[in-house]
Image 1: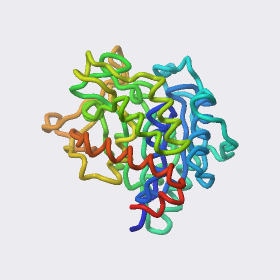
Image 2: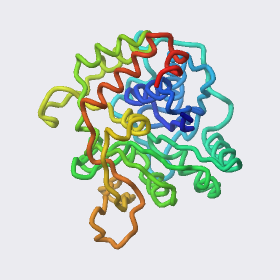
Image 3: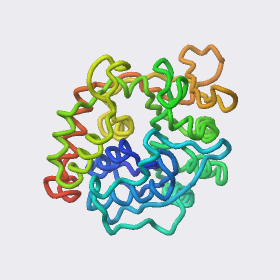
Image 4: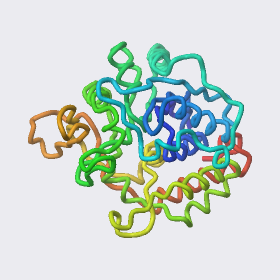
Length: 323
């Protein structure tokens, strides 16, 4: 098996932590590095959080690159727990990993070009605002040829939003960047709230993360501290781990199903950040994305728990021997 080379573009973030650790425990993907953007919290804190996560995994050869400190056009907004800032050391222990000097946008450009030069392509997992990716595509359009696909967690169609009544946070935080990415010609896979709300993790599932050593305990601490349940909205206990669906789709695509559609973003006015998907060709526009509509809840939950548990069996070295 040849692992798929990926860059994780993230704004850690609790969900991001689960997605990053899942990827680092999965031999099906080769994480070239993390490109970090402001989003859930300010850039200095998302970078610190990313370094802590990589340190917990033992992945010293996975560089962390700081990127855009704010959106392209709109005023900056932060996530639900912005007041928290960086992960407290009591939740996620401090480590000794620091960020690379290379800017995240340059890292994306360089990685895509290097892949194209040898006839290969990379995948970008976009689990935060897509500012870094949009900047790379705007400033260096040739890099699109080195990107196989962008697997994005973002958007909401029938589910409506969670940051506003009409918008999912990653898109709302930088709708102009999302629109640039959607119109780039690079194949896009969209993991919207409509799908991520179908897989809900309960306190029992969080307890099982603890089998994953220090990394698993950190996830247990984060998800136990920041309650994600909303019985009024979901109709049952538990909450989603949105970002990890991007990694799960890459390593177990059979757990998901989706549909082709033209996807766009509202970038002005009151409903800025609203995403729409034309599943039925009403706009006479060619599809630019695959929208994932359904997930096998039990299968996804079991997969994430199993991958996190690998950190309790010797870390990345053991994970790399698995399959």
